Length: 310
Image 1 (cartoon, rainbow, N blue to C red):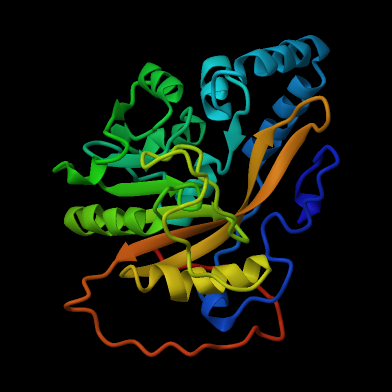
Image 2 (cartoon, rainbow, N blue to C red; image 1 turned 180 degrees about the vertical axis):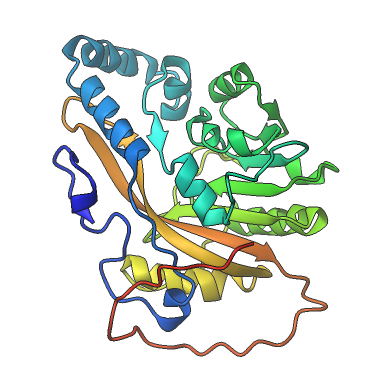
């Protein structure tokens, strides 16, 4: 896929949008191929300019060194504006949801973004929704979200409100949450009540790390995601069958996107492989019995280019 990007600034983009190894049949039939676009290139260009600004990088390094004695990395980024992230463009988001931008109206539509950080990724959803709700545990990041006009909900007890929305998103939160199972339960509870879909993304293979833990200072979660294997494709397979299905979610489709972060003096940008899943809540009392074969990876790795509309 590297030929779709003119400038990757030393990053290898061959597998930014497709797994390095063969997918299982269960994963392949739900896969939607994403492609880079102009917004992806623009983020890389801005990141490279920032990385090459010696004065700015010197100020950043000094600031991080001084503030790091008191604040967490997330709080520091919230105060300084460092470490901006990029996951998808408006066009990529619309394609993933099956939205026709020529006829779509944001009027009376609501989205809830959990663990929204500084709101950089959330901003790409704003054109599609009239009201944007968000949660965030970092107090410094909360200030940034409020400055952008988002309505903040309690970061721990958000599911206990009576809010109903048209979409819930949890970008790169599940593997950073102190209790992934609680998050999945809360997502299902609110999505089922709202009759809406959920987008969950996380870096694969899974690596748990908890920065904000209301139950203490441990960086380990209370429970772990039931995934096996070492490859991105292995973990996609187990997320579909061993994580989302037992949590009463049907995977509508999934895609792979580069989770990009602004660079520093060492690198123009940083990249992690993200699996992005569109989930539909299923009522276990009415859902039909489904037989899923524990299949092996296919011999070919030709992606399915089309996807069904919501």
